[in-house]
Length: 407
Ligand code: AMP
Ligand code: MG
Image (cartoon, rainbow, N blue to C red; front, side):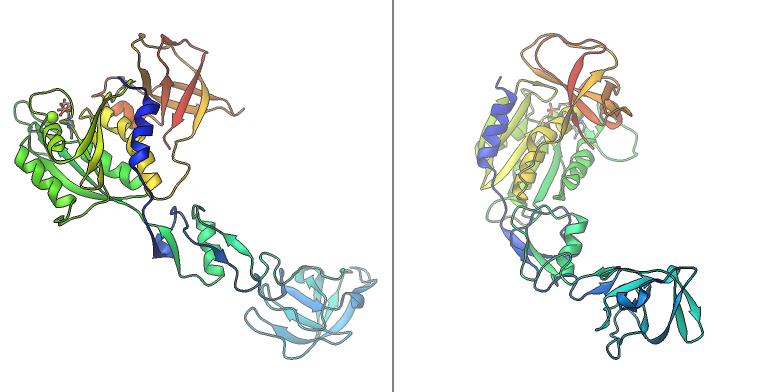
């Protein structure tokens, strides 16, 4: 067996970030920027009002109060998107709407709530200081500022900032296309009653969804029989010079353990440069990883929980690296066990499927999400975290345990 971090390091050595490509803003959320973004103008581009109200000269409001309002003529109205027809003169007001440019000659805005209509005039009921409710040009960004650079992960707000400086496309590391197939003669799909010895393929939907959740593009390569030719044909269709449905990475599940019909193992050994690992973890001990005609391939174990945990520990960080992410690990927090989480010493790190709950005081508590067998997928469905139990005898109620948060 090899330690988990060594298996992860072996994989990381072979994974590289995909080249950058221009994508529309609407498709860029979560992707990693590969260019510098500068503000070509000041943002906001002109001084404007933060309030609906009246543009005035602050000196004209001196001494104004609710008891002693000052009446001034309203000489124009400035809507957002318009400009004042002429400069504001002393002793005048212009009605102005949020976002409209401040008229020349005005140095303050008095909000509408502090005024009252007075025929063609307006009553100013408060004194305002110079600059009141004015958002100066460049208040958010000066012209020529370097706003974001390579490595920045694009959030919804980042996309808004990019749009505000005129970008319609951004150069980002593209999403990998990730092929997923299942193997096994026992597997079937859909509502048809199960025949003797049959089970339904649950790994493919889970893995395709995990790929999508990681931000990559899932490519469903189907369910393959335990047949060397069928497996080889599927692999050749996905990678290599004659690929008809090319992918940037491949994920298989099943067929990588020690069984007589583990043909994935046999085909991959023949076609690719694969590393067969027994990783010191439970679940998900067997793992195949390597390059198949230049494409990374993850041969995950067949048991449903194992394939998902294996994806979390090995495939997900790799897909994130391909997308240019440097933060590839799930967040971990220290939690208090609400029940004993015992395990025998066996040289492995155990990953228990748990429900982690934050307490009002910020502490986390964990309990089992259900049965801990590697075939018991419902516990995985109920879990929101994996508790990391290092080799040893586990933890008692009230003891601390590290948990890896999955959502
Ligand atoms: P294998 O690694 O092919 O020996 O499979 C190990 C276990 O996982 C067996 O019980 C398989 O039936 C089960 N298994 C393999 N692939 C899948 C799948 N796609 N969906 C559900 N169970 C699977
Ligand atoms: Mg099998």
